Image 1: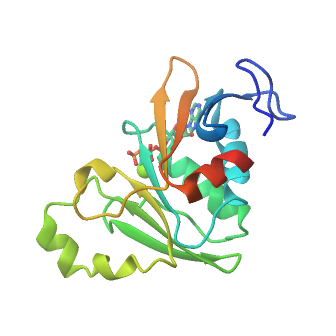
Image 2: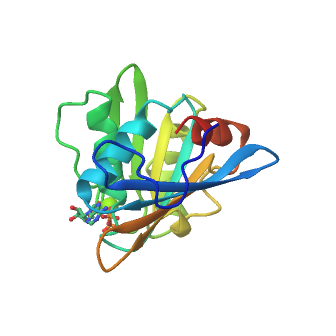
Length: 177
Ligand SMILES: Nc1ncnc2c1ncn2[C@@H]1O[C@H](COP(=O)(O)OP(=O)(O)OP(=O)(O)O)[C@@H](O)[C@H]1O
Ligand SMILES: [Mg+2]
């Protein structure tokens, strides 16, 4: 794979920059500087075409870091025309787009394991659905391992974003990104 060098402009908008590091010639991590919301959406468009059934993606980062913006960008790139709202209170929002079933979780307000079980969330993890999970730190023992972890860091201007692949499926995703 051709890995863009740090500072090299990686898309035509000129505001999405990336750098990468390989492990055993396989792409296990990538980082990007996203200058503005448009850059987050451009990255979401690239991620959208790499999604595979069963993929689990954790989204780390402070409140307002851009996690929901990325998911919205993915769904819009897949042709979802409806409103993509933050699942802050519902904890999960389901979507069907481009023949994919997606689940967008935000676990910030998950109180305990009983709430998780009562809502039937366990049954959602069927190996078919694609998961984007904000605040996975709130339920580490309840959710499956991530194929890809994406960490957002709020900068004075823009965001730094790091991708880490934990599985073969995740590495394939990063290699193509
Ligand atoms: N690359 C970027 N640079 C600057 N601002 C951005 C960038 N990407 C997104 N934003 C803005 O940052 C905010 C991110 O809000 P968003 O709801 O996506 O955050 P979040 O990480 O999901 O937060 P929460 O944990 O509260 O759900 C939005 O106002 C969006 O316009
Ligand atoms: Mg959010």
